[in-house]
Length: 629
Figure (cartoon, one colour):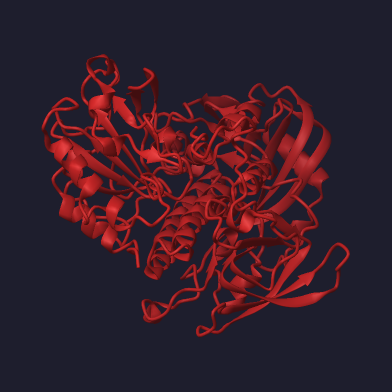
């Protein structure tokens, strides 16, 4: 963690000094703002946590509830989300309180006595080793708490205005603040009051019944599966041996997805309530919890569960729905005007809860848009950057729905109707990387280059998240994960993997470093503003092929030892060496001739280039960033 750049710090370094709109931030909503976030769901809070790093952007967030969420419906935290928590500074803390999923048990009818169930498999939860981070279970409310803490502790000091409901909006493209939003106070001293506020952009994170979505004329299209599930978080006693292990239970009497919860005692059951008649008129949603408990006991026979307390319960029908765009611009108008209203999460894609995707994908929606709004509103990026939000995330949501439709259908299919008795288990193992969050692959666009040079760093696929590997930090002989050093601060990363030459020798690496430091076409020079230090917009590091004991860090080019803060202090911690038994060049298939890996602010790989491709690097950023006036 870097925190003395503005002078000595003796207090909690995670709490930033207020800057910009964070200074004396008013409690009430102003009449005008840059960004209005509607809803404190996963997408909304991560967007706020990102935008707090842009203190010169006036961001507000409203929530119709009178206070924080206390009981969240979502609980599955995939490994990609834990990577994201690392970037926002709280992965270690939330990991300590969460339940860790290490394997999944599959139970099916006993071939000798089909009325009973028996365990038929217990594959590892991460059979392919796709991440160094765990798969967690923790209440959604705690996830929101951590992101809201990050938003409040950042320099913009963003906090929600609770008890404020979205009423509607109108757009006037010619106005300085084009979006007029009607809000109503539904709690507190001002309850019943209605007013109009104006924003440059609105981000609707207000759930499946989204008022923001309806206001821009978008519709959730799709259909239900006419299948209902009862879900309950319970404190109970049982003789079922795998009660503290994630289980897919399939019996003659239906199916259960069992999810142990954090805290050592609580667990969740998704209980199969069967097919729903077309003329049901939502009667199934009135199923009493007693009936759900009875069904659960029938399914897990010969075991039983004695429920002592129900913390939360609900009934839902599986549905898969998606909007055609995640903003207010239609396909035929794309490029002719700037999108002003965006939607995320359940507001634009809904699916079953059993693949543990809703909260995880929603967070990536919010992060994707958050840094883009910050970059545009701070004058660092062209407005065309905002078109990439819907372009990128709508495709990801469609892929998710296609996957979830198959998974939820398999979960509800009796074993004797599957192609093979182990079909569900095999599907789980084969597709593990998708629900873990690592199959997202953005296609070539304004901010994602082509794959012409992918062979230089095959382990960093362009368009996919930067998959960390361990290196040795030279200045203090500290082995660490390189990807974990990237925080959600809105900066672009330029990772330089040196050729075979040592530091201080004339080489392709030294020539690239000289260009990066001094050439007018270098992004570090072209987009530098008065008041910026060497690392304001870009975080540049270098990894050498030599062992750290064979290096003199003072011989490393200056661009890799930036001067930061008003005191222009030399920062030594961006120079790395390989580890003897864990060489990142081998681990990530990096060419020994060297490579440049460009990573976006949301930590997806934007480009892989050779060390001499300075024109390509310059051209890439020319299309994204804005030069000094």
